[in-house]
Image (tube, rainbow, N blue to C red; front, side):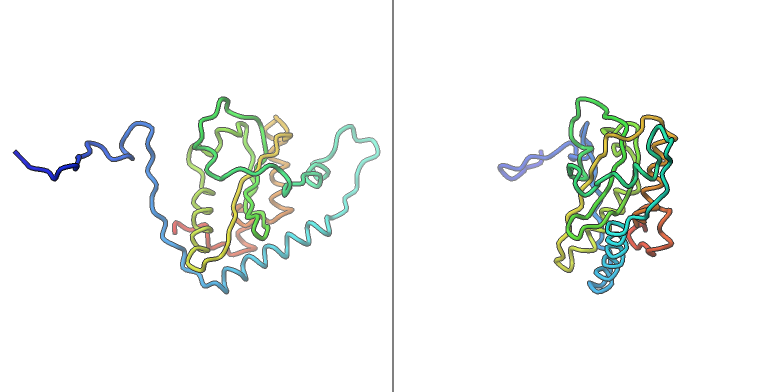
Length: 197
């Protein structure tokens, strides 16, 4: 018979192995100097500030029955959408959500990091999503330097329900903001946060 110290209880399962449990893999901080990180963020911020201040004029149609993709992209005030924690997908939800566009933003500066679209806003991030890793890498790069970071996600629920129309709008917004976590924009930012870390 094995003797245990009083008060010691062995566990048959770890928390990660229990039903409904999840495993959180530790993230090694991304090795990046404070100067490189701040310079990278400033470049993204400066581009996005120009977009905000100097939104490109586009020719509307006098006879258009509905707004163009460009009109809608210009009308979304994404910095004033209600914010949610990027771990929202772990919360118990009563429904699967709605068709939406979503934006991952670091409100500390602020900069738009990612633009996405979904048919079910409550379900999109429950499975695999590379952006989850990008966010972890981004936040971990700030920690060794004690830099503030405030990454949240916002949903715009007025997105078209038609998938093709929603994707066109998503593409226009990715192009407009040059959001660095979207693959389409990696060429502009040499994004260091998308690696396996």
